[in-house]
Length: 190
Ligand code: 5GP
Image (cartoon, rainbow, N blue to C red):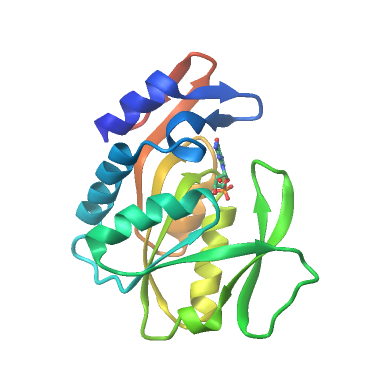
C-alpha cells in the first residue's frame, strides 16, 4: 500500500532493538484519513471472506479495527490486557509475550463475545514474531470460532511472524512489509 509506505518513510523512526516508532500516525497520534484507507484496503484484501467480527488487542489495534469494521459492517472485540492473578472463569485467556515491553502478560476476551458461529478477522498494527496474533488465534480457537484471516498494518518481514501464521493455514495480509530497517534506511519487500 503505497500511501502507507510513503508515510512510514516520511515519519517512521527506527529505534534500537528492531523497533519502528510510528507514534505520529499510528500508535499515539492517529492519522484518521490514513486509517480510513487502511480499512478500505483490508476490506479489499478479504473481500471474498465472510467476516462476522473483527478481533484485535488493546490498545493500538482498536482504532485500526474500528475503522476497518465500518467497511465490513461488523462489531469489533478487543482482547484486554490484565494481571496474571486476575482470572475470570467467563473469559477466554491466553498469555502473550510483548515484543516491545519484553515481558509476558495475560489477555482475555469475555466468552459472551466469541461464539462457535463466528468467522473472525484478526487485525493488529504490527507483526514481529506473531506472539500477539498467535494469542488471538488461540482465543478464537478456545471459542470454537473460525479465524478467516489476519490483517496487519506493518509486518517486519525479517522477523518470524509470517512463518507462524502460515503454519496455521491462515490467510495473512500485511499492508506494508519491511524487508530490512536501519536508521534512515527502511527497505520494503512489496
Ligand atoms: P509480535 O507479537 O508479532 O511479536 O509483535 C507485535 C506486537 O508488538 C504488536 O501488537 C505491536 O504492538 C508490538 N510491536 C512489535 N514490533 C513493533 C515495532 O517495531 N513498533 C511498534 N510500535 N510496535 C511493535
